[in-house]
Every structure is written in C-alpha cells, then in structure tokens.
Image: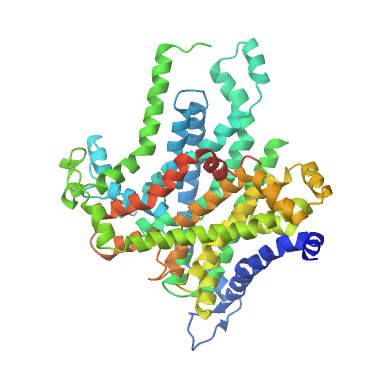
Length: 291
Length: 271
C-alpha cells in the first residue's frame, strides 16, 4: 500500500523535494556562476560566452573600482559593527532589569529591524535632505551649520553608518538581553559576599560570561552587514562619485547596468570567499575565547 | 539593593532617550505622509500642521498601489506556503535521520549574498521566460524562505521527544500521519516563528524584485523606489506609500512580538 511505501521510504519522501529544489535553484545556479567567472559575456544572443581563463580575476585585482569597493565595504561594516556591538550591549544592560513597559520597549526595538528597508531608506533620505531635512535643523541648532550628508563624498559613509546602527543595534541588544536572562546567579551572590561594586561585577562577571553570546551576535550581524544592499541602493546607488559603492553594489552595477556577467561572476566568487573568511576568523576568535 | 531616587530618574531618562531615537524616523515618516509638499519642505511646519489625507488618496487613485499590495502579498504568501511545504518535511527528515548535506546547504544559503543567485537566475529565467512572472518571483523568494524555515525547525524537531512518536507508531499510526497529526501541531510555535519571518523577508525584499520583477509582478519596495527616482520627489505621497508598506510588518511585530524576536535571533541563542 502507498502509505506503507511512504513510511518505509520516509527519509527520502520527506527530503527529496527539498533536495531537488536546492539543486535546481541554488546548486546549479552557483556552479553556473562559478563557470561563468572564466568567461566573457554580455548576455548577447549573437555572441556566445568566450572562454578567457583567469583573465577576469586578474582584471579584478587591477581594477581600482574593486579596491575602492573593498575599502568602502570594510569602512562601512567595521565601524557599524563596532558601534552596534557597543551600543547594543549597553542597551541590553540598561533594559535587562525588570521595569514597567519592558515588553513595549522590546516591540519598539523590533520596529527598525522588521520595517521594509526601502521605506526606511527613503525616510532617512528625507531626514538627510540637504536643503530641507530635519538632520540639518538639528545640526544647525547644535552649532554645526549645514551639512551635505548623503550628498557628500566624505559624509556619505558616516551617514549610512548612522542608518545601519539605528536599524540593527536592536538585534545585538535583543540577543544579549536573552543572554543576560540565562546567566547563572551564583557568581553574583559570592561577589556580593566579597563586597564587590556594581562596576566590578559588570567587568569581572557579566561581560566575560556574555562574551560567547556577543561573538555569536556579532557573527550573525556581520554576515548580513557585509551584504547590505537595500538601504544603500535606495539612498545613494553607490554615489556620490562611487563613495558608497560597496562590493554588493559594485557587483549589481556590473551585472545589471553594464551586463559584464563574466566579470561580475568572478567578483561574486571573491565576495563569497571574503564573507567565508570573516566567518572563519570569528569562529576562531570564539574558540580561542573558550579555551 | 535599593535604588536611589536620582538613579531611578537617570534610568527612566535613558529609557526615554533610547525610545525616542528608535521611534523618531517612524514618527517622521507618519507625519510627513499627512503633510502637503509645501509643509514637508518648510521648517515652519515641523511639528504644527493641519493633517491632510490627500497623499493617501493619491497613492491609491493616481498610482496603482492596490495592485502592488496584492502582488507583494501574493508572492509573500505563496513563497512562505511553498517554503513550509518543502521545508517542514525536509527539516523533520534532517532532524531524524542526520543528513549533513542539508545542514551544510542551509548554512551556505544563509551566508551567500543574494546577488550570487541573481546573476545566473537572470540568465536562466530569461531563457525560460520566467522574468516578470509570479512563478519566477515565488521560486526566487522560496530560496530565502525555505532554508530559513529549516534553520529554525531542525533544532525544534531534534528536541521533539522520541517516545511520543514511537508510542504513536506502536498504536498503528503511520509515520506520515504521526508527522502531520502530532508532530506539526506540537511544533506550532516554531512554525509560526519561521512563517512570520519568511513572510516578512519576502514582503520586504527589494533586490530580487529589482531584477526579476516587471510591470505585472511589481512589488511594493520596487514601486516606491521607482516612484522616487521617476519624477521630482513628491515627499508626502512617497511617505504615505512607505507607511502603507511598513504598516503590516509593524502590526506583525506588535502582535507576535515573542515569535518575531525568536526568529530574528534564531541561530544565536543555540550558538
């Protein structure tokens, strides 16, 4: 009977459809990209892809746009992650005590993370608007004068960092709040007996115990941070003058504006290896911290 | 330990400051959506203005936003449903039979930048005439949804008590029936978490639409992006559209806060 047959082969009946889907939609496209990275092709129906060997990779390493995008990605990601971690942990410590409205507070913290990134980007575009934005009203009232924000080559990345920090600090905070809730109570009790101050307890007990949680939160966040696309593309599209062209934006432009598909594929391979390297480093840090 | 009065005041003050910072852009978006173009552009109307609903009327009458809302909803709902249909049994299979292939794929799918798929999809979808079709969009969004659902559900199924299943099998219930009559209902919290997040990811997705969608399947994020870049910016209407997109997601976050939190931090808690 069919039910019996399903039961005997449950392992495959349950997993094969998903395997098939992954092979068709993920594995095959990825192999396709890998292969395409050795070709030159502009999606022309007349000119087929032309084998160029490692030329794409060599060209990338000689391409100032690649080095610029690497620099921009590193600048945006590293400053964002440091600020998000410091502020996230601070907020988590602030909110981890029990108080009225804690639930409401958590809901408000969720809002930046779940709200549609494109609409967030557009609100910030209005806030940063050089002639009429509220950001300049605030800057003026603080005595800084008119700023260019997203329209300035030097200020665009700091402005984008502010958006990212606003949007994603809550993620680190929420994870660390969960971590604080599961801390053991014994170390605190013995510290109280020894007469430790609140500050000493924070530095010598809370933070060391939270380190693994914080590193996990950072790993989770940095994977997505390196891939930031929506907020940057919707506000600046990589400008002005490529000052906010991260790797992700550069690949997008190469593939879908210039249709240099082989070149873009090679860049994707490098991008992927870069993310993998960051994850491996963070895992090593985590293991090192444990031993 | 008792807190002093000043400590309490500082603490409350800090809370309020953090709250204002998180809420401000939303309040700004909301207030601008009720302003006329002149009011948005003038510092005289920062906080005092007579609200107008003209922007919302314009969004629905002048522009085809009902169509975009429907497209976005349909793609998000179908891709979430499809991801559950494929992902739940697969997650169960992985949890019960230890299949490293999947653990690896789920991880890779989480790490890989979405644009890596987009290049080959664009070429293949063009050949198969899937550009600007709901089939193409739903399949693309399932690539985000399905691994996410598995990511959340594998640990869930792994912790499911074996004895419960085994006693059902002994009572003569088939494995298939045990799965959907017993395992799935008990696993509801995980299913709700992963479906809500899968829906939100799809609802918010911008990059896939930018390349794979067209006039027939245009989604909300793409619609407001085009809306901005087409003409000189009509800020009021743009913010009204932004509010419309954001509202459903915020409602989900408020109503199902617990689930959304556990979904967003999935993978972090378990290390």
